[in-house]
Amino acid sequence: MQELNSKIEFKINPSVYKKDPLSSDLGINIVEQGIDQIVELGFENFTFKKLAQRINSTEASVYRYFESKHHLLSYLTQWYWNWLEYRIVIGTLNIPDPKIRLENAIKCLTEEIKEDQNFSRINEVKLHQIVITESSKVYMCKSVDENNASGFYQVYKSLVQRVADIILEISPKFKYPHMLVSTIIEGAHHQRFFADHLPRLTDQIENEDAVTSFYIQLANRQLRIEK
Amino acid sequence: MQELNSKIEFKINPSVYKKDPLSSDLGINIVEQGIDQIVELGFENFTFKKLAQRINSTEASVYRYFESKHHLLSYLTQWYWNWLEYRIVIGTLNIPDPKIRLENAIKCLTEEIKEDQNFSRINEVKLHQIVITESSKVYMCKSVDENNASGFYQVYKSLVQRVADIILEISPKFKYPHMLVSTIIEGAHHQRFFADHLPRLTDQIENEDAVTSFYIQLANRQLRIEK
DNA sequence: GCAAATATAATAGTATTACTATCGAAATCG
DNA sequence: CGATTTCGATAGTAATACTATTATATTTGC
Image (cartoon, rainbow over all chains, first blue to last red; front, top):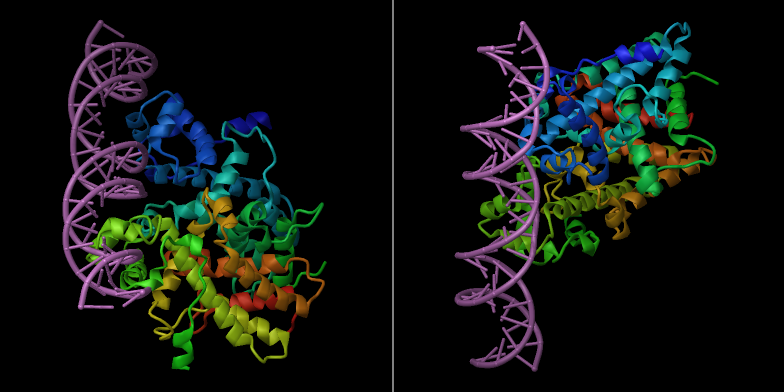
């Protein structure tokens, strides 16, 4: 398994980067330390100058890999979506019952990330934190349409489509499969954020991962799956 | 009605502004033209300098009203939440059946805003656009906790609580009333945005307001209300 | 109706951000 | 071993996000 994992490299849309960060130590450093620093400072306060200082390099060198911090954030978000889709594929393989496949997929979409999956050099726990707080800034911006044309959101779309397909397998007549999936994905991010910062906007239940169980119940009741 | 409306002024938490913008023509201009310009440029590209130029004033004068553009956005968002709550109160008055009250509330939370309600000098259609695209930036930021302590999100919380109370009236044992409400509010924003920019992440249906009908159905099925 | 208080325009200035350009040394690749 | 790529170093620009000061209007209080 270790071996299998180490061979995996996600295809990130080349238009997010100027130079493939996985092609050099510096690039890997930019991504790795970038994640750490975005978590520490928040995306608004994060700059390439600060990152360059942290990795003992120069601003100009960082700019050789990414056009802007927005592009770096897009890169990270795409990595995350790829990773999610990969986990969903793995988690639904060889399971004949689509209801169980859906439940597993929703778990992937909503569950808290556990420490150190040793999957790659990317720290998935921190990346998940970034995605929760910052990922909507990747599309809620003036450049959406342009970025969309460049393919920035392809992985996200394919992820949504994949889960929507499971829903349609269960309920072919369900009218809103994509809405349901994107509501769950974005909703889970919001609920995790609210739990940490604005608890009155969510519900926390002891000894339960309320976010995951809420969205599983939500999907089941939408599709009238009784438990 | 005209008369009644013109008397209404929402209480905005004073810590969002340095000087009450409703206390002067300049302040009103800042808010009104600010809305227009944020819609035109997007929040990231919007600056106080540009706003000052548009209203033939100076950057320094704008700063006398708001500490930063983030504060202006918070002000606008609070205004929107107040307005939403007001509409929900009106829309649920004197209706004994909580199921109908909930449906009306969800309509307020999710429906597209119609042209020119003539409610105030604020352009609600444009404000709604801003809220859809930018409002999450008001809390998805490093200063959440500080802003929360200052009361920036009180109206949002009371709005969520108000609708959650209707839910609990219908289903007192329902475990996730706040999650359901905030999922609907945030979800509706996302779905409207996706419909405009990333349609594969949502579902659009001819001659139907898919967003509203999806979330009404969602709530009903969550609470096992049959139609 | 005038003094006092307040509001604003005008100007100036700072630190930081978000980049771009150039150059030479070092590493690597063929 | 020579060519190319990579990177660090330095420099510079335009814009952003503010703060401070002063002089002139305007309002208000008496």
